[in-house]
Image 1 (cartoon, rainbow, N blue to C red):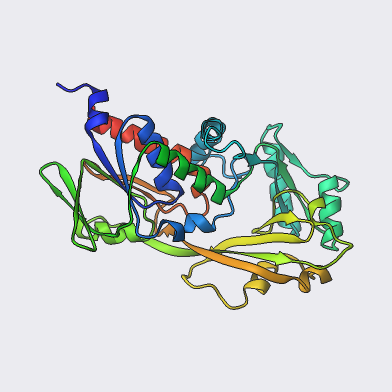
Image 2 (image 1 turned 180 degrees about the vertical axis):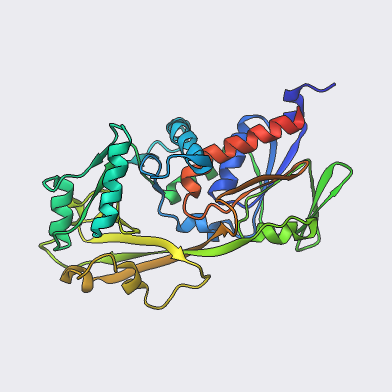
Length: 360
């Protein structure tokens, strides 16, 4: 009888989808000794490449249930994985803190209540005389922005993370196929995945991490799962105002759902994930800068130097994300909506544990 370690070394796992979730699963499973193949027709065009990398963990207000448990586990795992991945990219890090702001007094009262009810030294209400609030109000020429700060949350550069994961996977000689899987079926305790070119890939286990397209592969297997598209989009804005220094602002902050990341003295990124669509609207600048009653002139006169978007998937009728065993050796891990990067460590740990149980 084979040992569990021998099962790992001889079991072939096919991961469909090469975004953050797919690559993190490959990272976790390859460290356990599994043979891994990642398949994706266009890995540089998936939604992970459009992510801003905001890690909203401790600052998340619903502190109960499955979503919070996943966040808690990821919060604990991220520092360990950062240390591990720094062997391949020493510059990879999480920049902190994360600030959540609002112009709405009622929303602020809820944030304030959340801080007061949770005895957490890393979460605080920002006072009016806070340097963060002063600088934000000054830059945006307003007086009514209030909020909270999380000293443990922050941001990881998504593109840098993806490139670092690629370096790791290349070092581990993980097989990558630039193919599209159009059908999966089970035959003699193995999974047969058929590519668009009619090639067949045999594996012991299949992990579906390919967002909206995962549903297409399991429809014929009688699984009633629904995913709807959610558009995440961002713009990079150049400003021309000598009196404004964007680097006086926090490294990353959120105002009423819009994520703002200053890149230099005269350049900032604004992004959001909130449209149930697959195509961005034409008025992207107005949509992403509507977090103020009145825009300061430097922002109104700003020029979009770059814009991008990504299509994410959100479960329809059940909580996000979808993490399920669909059949023996068939796992789905997708539908992360806004939190793919944050939850990647916890979800890959869950997948690894499910596979260990299946093979034991």
